[in-house]
Length: 206
Image 1 (cartoon, one colour):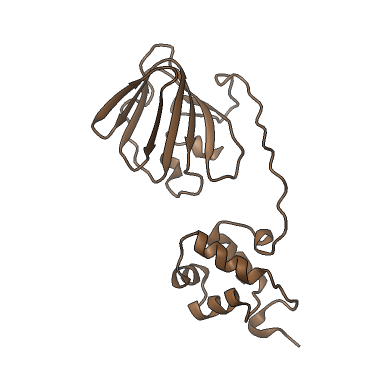
Image 2 (cartoon, rainbow, N blue to C red; image 1 turned 90 degrees about the vertical axis):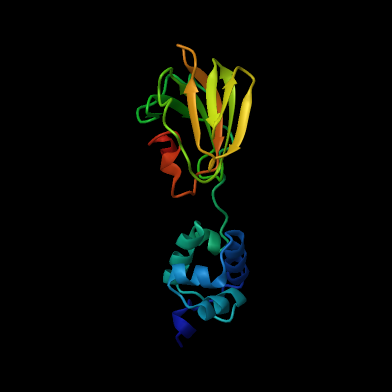
């Protein structure tokens, strides 16, 4: 006998609570999540309470809405991510890891909510570009001097100084010395549709 609503034949007892928890963790109402997945709120409610079993197309659609994978929805253990990132000269960057003159190296694991980079900001690059986008940014100056303009306020930073700010604040970043500046940079734009606005046009591709 076919399962109801085109669902999978076997019971998936762990899927219902995971669907509910993922939706809530993403800050989505039942109506909003159902609309994005092409389901009715009533149908999604039945999936979340276990009264209906999801089909594979439904799982694929919900995985896209929640920014995850079908494997996670099914409770399968993801492969362990490498926690260690080996260093190297930030100026000696692979092709494609430059954006508008800024050179960068990945300093954290990929596929996470935060993205950590080691960045070299050359003198005279992007000093007049104002950026505004969702998320937070944190930077720490390793060497050289850096000018950070937040709104109408100008901050000149030296080695050991840091800044942590809401990225919706209009901001500009520029090196003050001819040798440029090196810094650690962390942002939370990984899943933002506006990520391409961070550090010019290429940083988000790491």
